[in-house]
Length: 75
Image 1 (tube, one colour):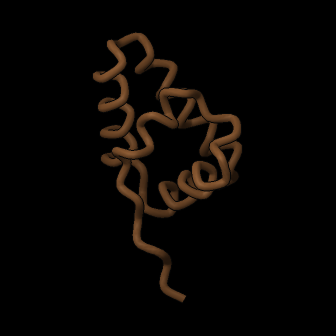
Image 2 (cartoon, rainbow, N blue to C red):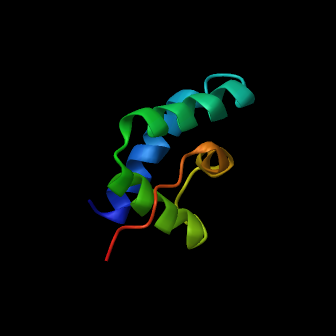
């Protein structure tokens, strides 16, 4: 999946979660990604975050610390 699509999906979740109080929105976004995104998607997500998070909404960046970072792929 492209980095643009990963960022767009994370931002769509964030836009919904931004209607809630901030702490609830952060938790909801992190829980959604943890529950529904496969490790490969989360790995791509963290590539974006680790590169500075360009294009990600602020709520996504705030939630990143609560999203489970998948183990590195085996070579």
